[in-house]
Image (cartoon, rainbow, N blue to C red; front, top):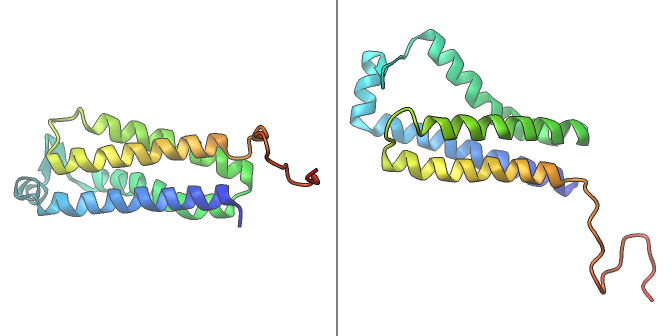
Length: 143
């Protein structure tokens, strides 16, 4: 199996699980839960439009778990870089909406690191490595 595909898919799965568990913990936060039940969290109305937007946002990393495996390599690289940049930017910006709770900051650091790693891995995937001393390139015969 192509290691670029496997790495990207695994990183997208890791990021997705962190996004989802952070959301689960948010619902365990009494202040946040009261806001969700009242339909307003941090000054944002939690209506149908917000829920659709949140669904679209979380669907990006979920879809990328699959797409990074099934798209052609070039398309997978580009999609992962674009989606990784978008998710990194969104997560970073979310830290400035209001002072984040410690658990949210903890998960945000992990999520930003994961999506930044995705961009890096996608960027480097397929880039030829320079041969190191004493390393035999594929297709050559060692002397």
